[in-house]
Length: 217
Image (cartoon, rainbow, N blue to C red):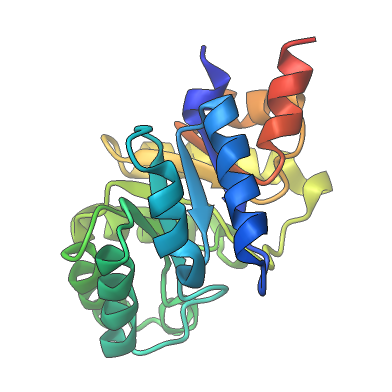
């Protein structure tokens, strides 16, 4: 397994300078990651830096819990696309989902998924096992390419990765044919291997460099 090719290297620091983003891009190119996931304000610069490399530019939309309106979320996705993003990682409207407004959540996701290839973050740490199943099925129905566990402020910390592995298995079983992405607390090679064993196709982590270096020892 080429570990770098399943890692979406992640850099989500607010207020990062252009030189810092360029440094992150150079590191991403050096290690040959699958993609680089960034905040919307950094998408345009990152696209320029990674042009011609085949590395995907991924824009995180509406973190951490998807509280914006559908109209606002579509606008965010369209802006990211205009700035050159290859994929959108959008947070499901978690509060609406938890309150049973499933039709609203599904229609919102369908609208966003029409803008660009979309990975949907369901915030599995906020959900029951049954809700994870339902959310995963909904993500598939919406036309997304991938269902993802978490993003910033994930309720599950590093010590709870076995619970996240259980979530991944539910996601994989509930939405066959859909890619599954594990993110939040994946910091070591052992963490990555646990997630892959549980069914993850993609790993989102800010520790990609450390994981690759550990694997190469």
